Length: 81
Image 1 (cartoon, rainbow, N blue to C red):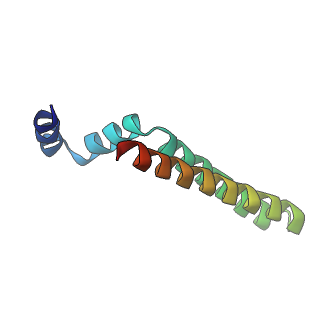
Image 2 (cartoon, rainbow, N blue to C red; image 1 turned 90 degrees about the horizontal axis):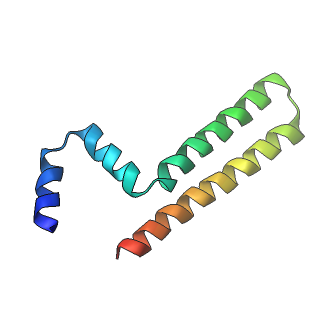
């Protein structure tokens, strides 16, 4: 029931709450990891190659990853209403 799950959340540590949220909404943390990875790849491209076209492709991929993450978040909010 709702009360027992609410009481369980009150007893949970921060890491347990985070883990439970990741299990409930797995696309959000995956999107965040993907976004961060693409961002780091773009920064590495910028510092190593100095190739503007390559860096631009990485940053476009980052925007797409961020958009996907936001869409997943909005979808989970819509499902839980």
